[in-house]
Image 1 (cartoon, rainbow, N blue to C red):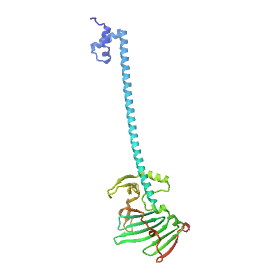
Image 2 (tube, helix red, strand yellow; image 1 turned 180 degrees about the horizontal axis):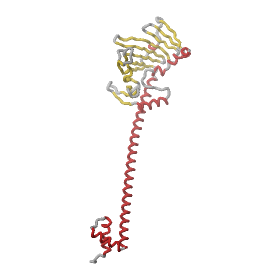
Image 3 (cartoon, rainbow, N blue to C red; image 1 turned 180 degrees about the vertical axis):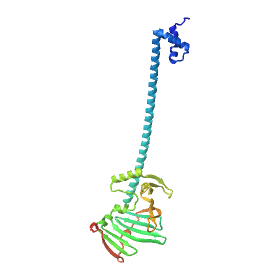
Image 4 (cartoon, rainbow, N blue to C red; image 1 turned 60 degrees about the vertical axis):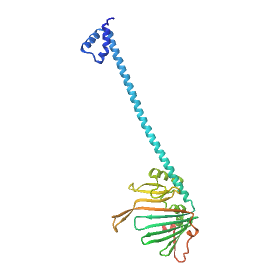
Length: 322
């Protein structure tokens, strides 16, 4: 077996020398030989260069992996955001479609030329009011009745016809019939105003504004189904008013799209006489009942006024501008 030359021995020790793992005796031997041998010195430089290149390559690989990982995180983040946005879009699109469907059903219900609507309003006090609307083929009658512990009291009855410039208001208690004529009366005798007047659901005069209204409800109101207060399932549209301090809630019949119950939280305040001290806050609650094809011609015909005191009142714009 051949004996290794000093160069071979030193070259075997060069990696340990570079790593600084040699003992002092071996280290001195290597350094002494390197000072005298150009070939081994060159070999040392080559080893150090290779190590440096390897370290640079490893650093590049690590940097690359970090870059890939960072890109993956960013990609995953945007994918998650995209999924959330997509879910939100789907949710609001479905909600918009449902709200539009409700409004469409309500509009179709109001197209009826024969319907009865009863609006009952409770304010948390000792009285309640009921307004009954009878509508048939353009003619209508409104009856306002108040209820208390003493019983029912019909305060007035109003008759009119769509497009007419005349309204007949009857003060039942005082037996006075006010016949109001003029362009203001004609404006009041508007089909949309008469039919939609008591509805808490907002309707616009054009499809464009109805779409905007539906979008407003889509983003500003919540929509759910409920049947807690009835054995029938209803839509419940709700939201906030008064700067978010109070809430409103409207129950809607699924079949007709018409409101059956409306609540405005703490919408009515009572005060101690002669002060601004709040005595109590009450919810403004209204209940609605609709029936179709039950109104007769007799229901909307103006009765015989021969027993009433007649008052003729002009309802023209110029009379109020003078």
